[in-house]
Image: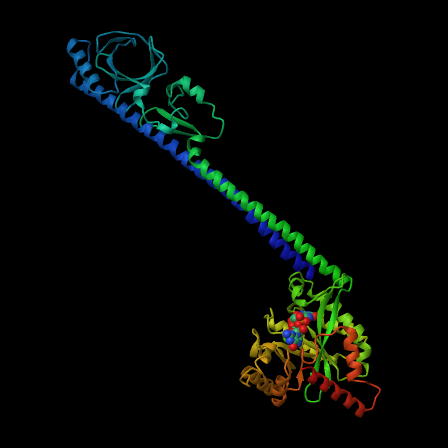
Length: 545
Ligand code: C2E
Ligand code: CA
Ligand code: CA
């Protein structure tokens, strides 16, 4: 159980630390890359879409010119028709040339009356709807491919218009992509119409050394498509500064958290191991703080207070280690070791002194199951200490995790004759609810409230109400942290019988407590001498104040 709990705690801290160390790095990397990727995809998509739209509009414009000519009967190489063609060409920038092609695919004339032959690069793609025909051609004496749009005439000849690639889709590539990205216009059969920038510069740009954005958009109206490719840098330039700064931050966080995890493991390991070894080496020892009957001055017993006696002789108070023992699941083995020591040291002293009690502090963990009851039986069972001489203290300072289980554990302890005390009563979490639900025999009024006695006003309302509460529930009362004779006076008047505090004694190591017991409670003497011994003790205690 303790090992499991400790491991779980450590695992949570380590995994949590590593998680938060690594996540920002991945978040920055994938987050910014994803963002750049999206932006790049959008960029090429919008360029390609705009190019297609522009090309479609230009082709439509050319078609319109041809259909109007067919309607108006501009269908020959006559000077009048040529003049009409020249007018149409100079009226816009897309169509550079208009002319007539005969049945043998020979160009009879253009708007200047010049004939020419040209090479068909691909089969024409007819548009059944408007009888037009769109074809990729290469003009003689030119390296440039052009689109030739033709319109059938009644004579069997065709009216044609030529559109150079660059006129189809120029100026669409944004400034930031110049010298970096490439746009290609290809006919639907794969033959290339146009490439921007020129093939030569494109070759210098391609292949891109990193990831590439690419998209192909097919014209919804005409048989060509536009592909746009761009290197990652096109957009990454916008992100690289931010990326570097965030990465530095994430890396710094990584270093800090990993450092934290390592030092946590070292320290935690170190301290926890130290406690574990301390338990094995018997370094945790009991000190005994006497409890006195302030009516009779007799010794009533003690509270066991743990101390860590280091190999170097140093004695540590519980405040410096019980928190860690609890957090690392070592509280239970530590208490077990302590009880074994108490059993060993106190057994003979308690044989003939049945009135002497021993108070032992328990942790929240002890109330998880009945193991503590087994421990008590096995540790004290074979000694002269009777189970009804034992009192187990449960602090009110920290809440119990599971009240119902605690109730069962306490009930079982009481069935075996042990008694249960509510420690630090008045400080906090349980209060009246604890008293009602858990079944205590004793309440120990915390020093905080006892301190209120003996100050200017000789009244201590909380002490008073705790005392009357205890009376009502028929509980024994112990006043803790008594340092002043006036407090004893007050408590006596209120009917409190038991008290503990520096006024009487500090927590004592075994030898000293043993001597105190033997002095205050001699066994072999007659009752009269015993009474005198306790009066002596009381006198000394009062005098010490
Ligand atoms: P606690 O159970 O309330 O014990 C009383 C504490 O008050 C002890 O401190 C004791 O030395 C101190 N004390 C007693 N009389 C006076 C007084 O007149 N004046 C002043 N100023 N202090 C007084 P200690 O030994 O340092 O223990 C502190 C706490 O550590 C204990 O408070 C208890 O909660 C815990 N503790 C000690 N030993 C054990 C143990 O074996 N098991 C568990 N679970 N807790 C322990
Ligand atoms: Ca206590
Ligand atoms: Ca206490």
